[in-house]
Image 1 (cartoon, rainbow, N blue to C red):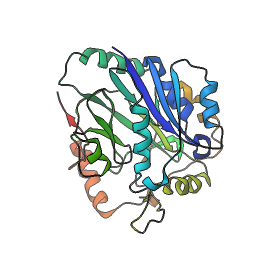
Image 2 (image 1 turned 90 degrees about the vertical axis):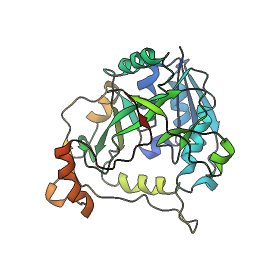
Image 3 (image 1 turned 135 degrees about the horizontal axis):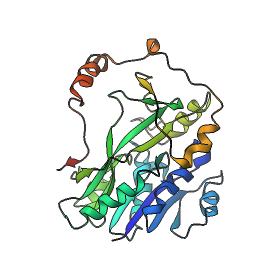
Image 4 (image 1 turned 135 degrees about the vertical axis):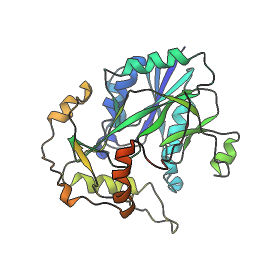
Amino acid sequence: MKISGFSYVRNGFDYGVPFLEAFQSILPVCDEFIVSVGQGNDGTKEAILALNNPKIRVIDTVWDMSLRKNGKIFARQSNIALDAITGDWAFHIQADEVIHENDIFKIKEAIEREDKNKKVEGFILPFIHFWGGYDHIRTSRRVHKNEVRIFRNGLNVRSYRDSLGFRKYKDFEAYANDTEKGEKLRVKKINAPIYHYTEVRGPGAKTKKAEAIGAFYEANDGKPVQKEEYGYDRLEKFTGSHPRLMHDKVKAQDWEYVFNPKNAVWRTKDRIMQPIEDILGFKIGEYKNYKLIK
């Protein structure tokens, strides 16, 4: 059984994402790691190569800005790396996601356990969303709780929408033309969380990154758009431990983030539904880009 990791990145330093930590976090269970690196100017490619890890293979790419509608450019880059893997299983990690060293081998054990069970096409992992600083996590119904990050190779899988998750497709041309919705993967859940750091940014850095990411989404008039900001509805103190790979970044935080619940911004529906869902223990009508099996 062979596990192939894959990802994509461009100007990772400028965007402030922990891409080096992300990639290294899954290397212990991967036989190879393929990353498509967009043409940039901040030393991202050089930093990846400087890791000097024989498992890593870089694919040089130029990002096609004509694919900005719905962030499709990200899916394209994900698929470039996916098409280059040679393993039996594909393990996707994004440049702002890190796996804890205490959990990484749980993932390998789960894959080995289900390797012969063809009913299992993949796995979802839960998310811990850091917000504002390294000591706060967002826990409202607005954040996604789980997503597909591992699946069998050879199922005609493509990155879905802006690379949030994955689906199976019968016709890649129809996928490219957005005329096939794809089929959700049959998955099991591994309780090995993804530490999601995309919203950890110091004062002034948030606007810079939001503007950069917004350039990869296009409105109907062809102009770049900002990703919608919902505001901070509910944040909680993080009391666990960060992955060892992130310790230096956590220690280097040079700003204090304070969340005041009195200033929380809630959509009306969320304000009503959140306390109900807290009691029930699940999200009512939760969108799931997968079919969870027992």
